[in-house]
Image (cartoon, rainbow over all chains, first blue to last red; front, side, top):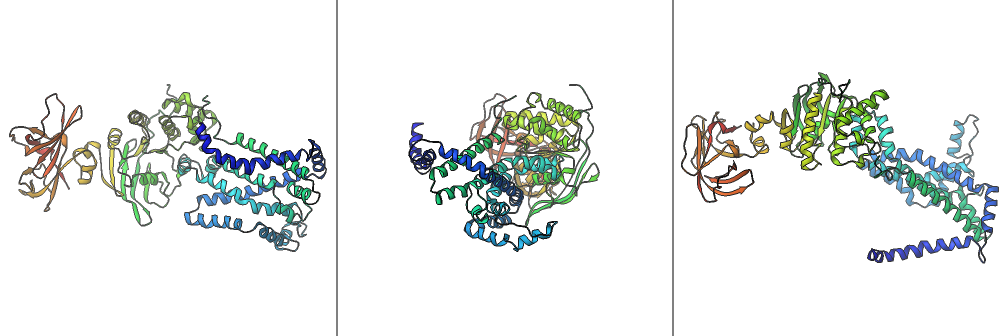
Length: 274
Length: 363
């Protein structure tokens, strides 16, 4: 046991130095630069409840998760049940944008979503009023661009949870009389809950702290947790407040992680024979 | 156990007919021109090595191979074009394929749910089926909490609870240890007889096939080599493949003589045959190891074939002794029951004899 610990020491040191120490530093900073105080947290609470920053961040993140689920689950499904060549081609298409600069992609979205742009006009045709929709410099644009950016985080966990399902199970279900739709609802979908939850957590975690898209497509009008933090550091040099905001986000994520662990099926229920 | 309106009501078996089944994977023919009939309530086993196409045939019957060609009839109605979920066939998979997110009772209720069976009847039938396979205590467990044998019983219960017209089993015992396998064999056979359900079973294990089946189809390279009762397969294998695949066999090759009534071996011995040999330059006969007798003195009798030889070695297997005898150019396996006498030692000159009627002429 102690030997095992010894072998892990380099890794532990590395994690401790690269992740543990900065995090600790951040946590200390949030309680004041010179003396212990809760000022930053009080300030944060007042500013965020006044400006609705936290709520906005959570709302955007939830919408992004929902958007990623709507587009990501079918894509993951297609990927999982496609032939080998198609799978390769499709996953390349999913990953390729990931290798291009996130800035470039966001500017591309600005171009697509701007007033009189293609999407805005098209959305106008669909809307009852006939007015071109405002898709940029508001939450809508931020959500659209973030969904497109974070989609792979949903696709791959879903894909993995689907391909890890044995073909036998689907065939058994069909053989026992389940139509394709019922098979999906009673077998495939429930067995991919892990992928859905994992992907959602990943997307949500990234979305909550996402900076580039809210900054660019929000046009300074959509203040989220990340843009708030950046603003505090860049404009007001209020490091403790930025640190406090970061700690709050971390707390939100820890709570979500705990919820995920509890909600995840198959990890529970072993050995408690009724 | 009370006889309710239940799965124990016998007689819902229907016949299964397969005609000219064919299945290719790319350019490889996995199944080639396979036809057979399974009479209502009877038990057919597809016996073959892996890659012989036996599982593909089963999957075609179940409807899992839409690319497959040929005609499949259940109870006189063609089902070849029906998707799997409308064929009303119960199937047991080698690796059980229990739904991991459902409890045992939910797994068994699954096919009933798909058929819109009312809740009360569902519960009653699940309960009865659980009793049938002896798992009433485990209704609330998850599949992952069950042993292999228990999982297989659940799979069987799930495949039978909706009273399918045909039951298919794909090597259901392969993953179990020997003792459990023997026990499950008996249970499967008893259940099948009681429910009188038409059954197709796939295995590579000859003992299993013989113990369970009314008839066995020996498969090789996508074709049926022979379809017969276990006894026929053993006593009258149709060709060399079946003779070798089913049980142990001694094959003697030679030239037909005496108007094809006897075989002349390369060492000159003459083997008389109960049936005419095929009219070819080369022919083969087969003798099962336990049909042979060993004598330490010359022994010639009417109606018996004889060959002289020398014992090469003896293997003591407890209830059985296995001799390898060099006779002419052939090594012959002889299997004798251990009757308590001293075994013959290696190097002993012997005469091998066997009844002419035990000489099997191979096509």
